[in-house]
Image 1 (cartoon, rainbow, N blue to C red):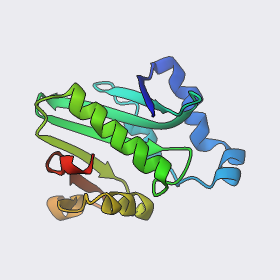
Image 2 (image 1 turned 30 degrees about the vertical axis):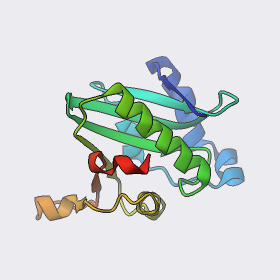
Image 3 (image 1 turned 45 degrees about the vertical axis):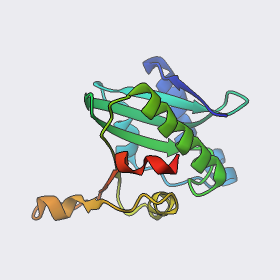
Image 4 (image 1 turned 30 degrees about the horizontal axis):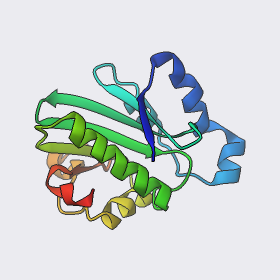
Length: 160
């Protein structure tokens, strides 16, 4: 069972160091972390949660921004292992259970996958969350040079 606790601002620097520790990257081969993703966990008008394992070690981060009682934007990142491993899948499912319990009237949950993060896209596809994928550059057309994906999870409650 994972533990999900709200992250205090003064703890953030220590946890971010897990993303940038060269020895950690060499020994565990985690996903590449985009700088924009790290910034997304620091948004002021939202809550950042740390995901802990049984030994109370941080294995991931989750950010939640509530727009109204029915719509939530989130970002989820496992830093201890690839998302495609069972640790990542279990932590994500428990994070969704946490969201659905905390926000009872939720109708739409979205996330953005930065760049062409194949591991993260494969992770969502394995969970069956590939029904509504939107490329931002398809929405905004000209002048947009990034490729982000938006997933709608609210109709996928069956994955938990």
